[in-house]
Amino acid sequence: MITWKNDDEMFSLMKEKLYTPVVGDILDQMGYRHQFLPAQIRPLVSQVPMGCYVKDDEPNNRLKVAGYACTVLENDIYGEPKKPFGYMTEALDQLRPNEIYIATGAHNSALWGELLTATAKARGAVGAVLDGYTRDTPQVLEQNFPVFCSGTWAQDSSVRTYVFDYRCDIEIGQVTVHDGDIVFGDVDGVLIIPKEIMHDVIERALEKASTEKTMRKAVEGGMPVTEAFAKFGVL
Image 1 (cartoon, one colour):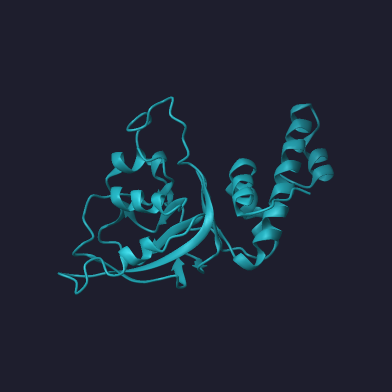
Image 2 (spheres, rainbow, N blue to C red):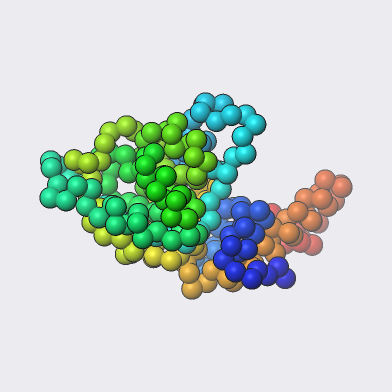
């Protein structure tokens, strides 16, 4: 059994050894069958032309994200807000290491950009997941910070978006996200691991990922897939 001593080791293991399909399979087996965010929420870096804004030889840490959810609820507004951006600055300022800013609720403007990326990174956060758009794409990508979103759009949020609350329950697609849940994302999507089962899910997923590697070697070595499935129980 693979173990870890602290959060840093746990999230490093997840990013090194796991991928969303295997974690999603474990969640399905445990009866948690609605844990993936909508399919259009993908890594920002995968949504731009290859080589655009990113040097070919630059280490790419933008394609995988793992951390604790810091939930943010936003509203669409129309006209000048009573408080510019609502509680966005407060939500950013209280981010903690190993947390991911995960926001939903507003769709009339970009929810993220260059300065928010710099702020989150300075606070020790490890990523942003947005049920919506980001902007300042070159300036965000150059900071090598994982941002997952549904697309890019330059329209400003100052007169269109209001952060209503943070560290509250939110709903994105089919998933209810609680503050402190585990957010895990890669090129195949983003899923949420409920915090009360996170250790069990991660342990089982690590075991399944190892078994899948063993089965692949067996199949590549000539074993019929029916025989391999009967022996290893994964596919």
